[in-house]
Length: 82
Image (cartoon, rainbow, N blue to C red; front, side):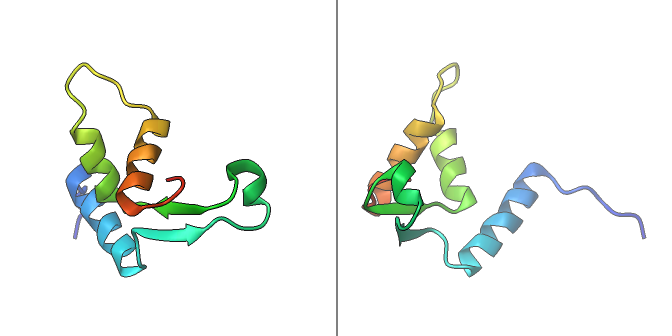
């Protein structure tokens, strides 16, 4: 039986389902060596569809940076960083 290629949406759905089964999105404490780079506080880790949703809200012809995405994720989950 030949393999059929998955569409981008199917891949995203599969990754998102797996992430949510593993407890994402989640907020974790920043500890150990990570505090040297990120400081103290908490880090929100988004599920794939959450990031996709943020990116889809960017108007056509406009740009969003990874740092802006991180800020949105952090704010949504009440974390220090995303």
